[in-house]
Image 1 (cartoon, helix red, strand yellow):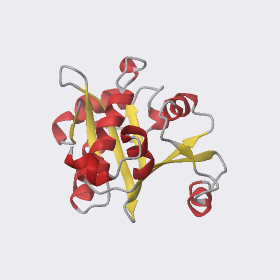
Image 2 (cartoon, rainbow, N blue to C red):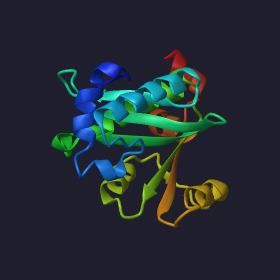
Image 3 (cartoon, helix red, strand yellow):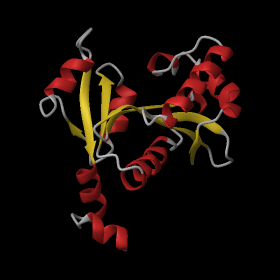
Length: 182
């Protein structure tokens, strides 16, 4: 379902990314395939430096259909950015990709929190976020982050998934050590 990003998938991902129903919501926009190669190479280098975590979302046949990323990592927290190509909308790929990514982030990579900035007009992303029972609206809990994401224009709400919320939802409040030993 997920694999580390690599340059081999750029042509397929670029074609999916430029669709008009996808492109406005992609964080790392590229207008040409060459530009997308360059951005992907920069992403791979940034991951090596620990600045972000990026994975390619795959369908059941191992074909790339989108990306899932954790950007701007500071203090073991970062911002989630996910996009899936338009032909794969509504086919059940989003939730399993996020679950696999969250498992990796929280259990293998020591991430403590995942922020999501969601444009209030992006109904598709809002619905996807609210399907996750461990997501909380965080505008008031993290006012400095909320102000930062809205510094240019007040169009986003801030949501958060903490490692504690995630563990509590899946493991009924058991201590992390108990869960990892099981």
